[in-house]
Each structure stands twice: as structure tokens, then as C-alpha cells.
Length: 421
View 1 (spheres, rainbow, N blue to C red):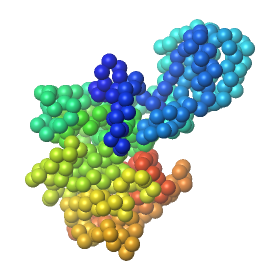
View 2 (view 1 turned 90 degrees about the vertical axis):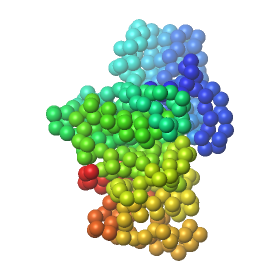
View 3 (view 1 turned 30 degrees about the horizontal axis):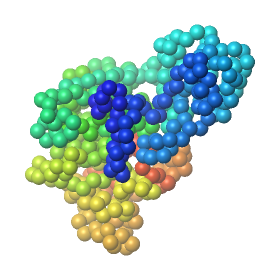
View 4 (view 1 turned 60 degrees about the vertical axis):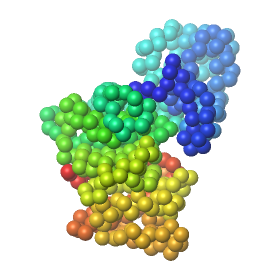
């Protein structure tokens, strides 16, 4: 699904610092499961049942394992982290007694790796130190599909597929089983951030839960940074052959670099989308995520309903008051959507005198929605278009750094889902 590796190894260059970081075993940092036997199990029991720090997604962070499986231990473990999920295989009663206070424990007389994985191991993941449990899609009456679509490589693809005639795009799809009853369904296409995969946007940002609650098809594209906007358009056409998609209700969303891909679709293929929900990145307009100038292809006349959100405490440029480069994209969206409030004269150096301290211009309406789970406020500014329709929502989230939260995603959907193309 993610082709940027060779022989099981990933070569990592830090996008933010532009530094080469080395080679790593391919895998998900948030799903580190340790399997051990005999002496290696003794090592795990002595050294890994505690908080472990190392290189996380954006630098130093906690990399404590999600699950530790230990078979035939000869030492009694000292468990410091009770939230590590433990699989104890063929161990003595004395060893198992040391595990009795663990929050997640499977004790078995013999290893059955596939069975134990399906029933116990696979449901655990650790995000930023917190152990989380994967949803039971069968219990939710949801489907989780994994698929691949082959597209023609477009001339403007400057990524890893640039020298190919065609290439594959992997995806994960989530939907309630009962919506596939023969009627057309809305589609939300998700674009992940640059340092992660489709799993972040799906689970950490909670888009699968929003899809479950509101009954739409959510499809997360993996490795979209190697995919051009033209290829995304072809991908959607192929997706229509697999699912009963309502072509009048196709939406897109993305976090960080995925926000950039959402903006790419706004400026290159606006006629496809009934609305877009980018989050946490405002790249300069006129260029795509490959850094190429798109020239006359840029959309200047087709309004696209938009719900953009960013973190008020982000260390990266996400909101107009944080960096001058953010203003250009907001000006562009307001111009294309023909907002009555004009943003052309917005000056970053004069931000101390802005009417709105975050976005600069006074909104037609402002809504503040509190997020109890994070004790923060989502402030949504609604800007009406010249025809009286509100197609533009610019939001900010208090106490948020470079993140994408389910509370914001759900409110974005509530706004965007009202529109059809």
C-alpha cells in the first residue's frame, strides 16, 4: 500500500528540518507489537515493560510498545506500565501472577499467533503515549475495505511514479453496511498528513466515527503525496465503479500535507467536489504539492464550499495571524467564492489592527462550539457570498497545535454536507 521502501526498510528524511534521518524497519510507530521467546522474552520482561522514549513522528517522543508477547520466561517480569497489553505464553503461575494487575492481559498455554492476533493483539495501538483500542467494525455493522486502483501517470506527476506509465493507488474504505442498499451514497475522500498514513486521518482524527454517525462512504487514500490531482480525479472515476457514489455529493478533506492536496483539488478540479474540508495547512496558491506552478489551470471562477480549520497554537503556519504566507490562500478562496467581505487588502504587518485577530476580516456570523474532550473552542467564522449563500467557513481551534480533531471534522461535515454539486 505504501511503496516508498525497499526490502522492508524505509529511508527517512525529515520533512520539517530537511535532515536525513537514516533507515528504519518499515512499520507503524503507533502499532509496535513485540513478540519474544526464551532469552529474548527475558530481555523484554526486564527492559520494555516501561515507558520507552525515542524518535516519534515529528522528533523525540514516546514509543512504548502497544503489545508485548512473552513466551517461556525464565525471569519474573517487573511491569511498570500497566497499560501495555500483555500476551503471556506457556509461562509459570509465578510469572502470570506478576501480570495480574495489567489492564490488558491474555494468558495462554501455547502460541497461536493468528488466532491471538485476531482476538487480542490487533485491537491495540498507542498514540502519543496513550493506549487506544481499535473499533470492532463488525459490532458497529461497518465494513472496512482495502483496495487498489490503477491509474495512468499524469504528465505533471513529479513524485516517485514520474517515470512510469501507470501506477497503483491504495485506499481504505469505511461505511455502514446498511447504506449499500442500492441508493446513491455521499463520498468523503481523505488525504493524510506528510508524516503519517491513511490510518491517522481515519482513526486519530476520527473520520470513521463521523462516517458511522452520519452515514456516508469515507475513503482514505494512502501515499497521496506521490499522486497528482489529475490522478485523484481518475481515481474517483474508478471508485464510482466499485461503490454507488452520488456524483453530486463528493467531498474531500485533508490534514497538513493532505490539506495541501485538498487545496490542489480546489484549484485544479473544482467541478468534481460539492465541498472541501482542508485542515492545518495554508500553502501559497498557484503551485501544487510537487512545487510546480500550475499557471492558467488554476480555478478562478468555480466556487467550492469550504470549511478550513487550523490550530491557534500550532508551531507551523496554519492561520493568517501566524504567517504572511497563509493570507494568500485565504484571499484566493474568498475571491473564488465571491465573498462579500473582501480580503485583498489584508496586511500581515498590520495584524495588530485586524477586525478579527485570527483571520483579519469580520465575519457575517461567528459560532463558537466547545469541545469537552479537549476543553477547547472551535470558533467558526461564516462569510456570505455575493449571492447571499454562505459557502465559506474559516475556523480556528483554541489550545490546538498541529493536530486534526474529531470534533472539528464533525462540525466541518455538518457545514459542508449541506451542499451538492
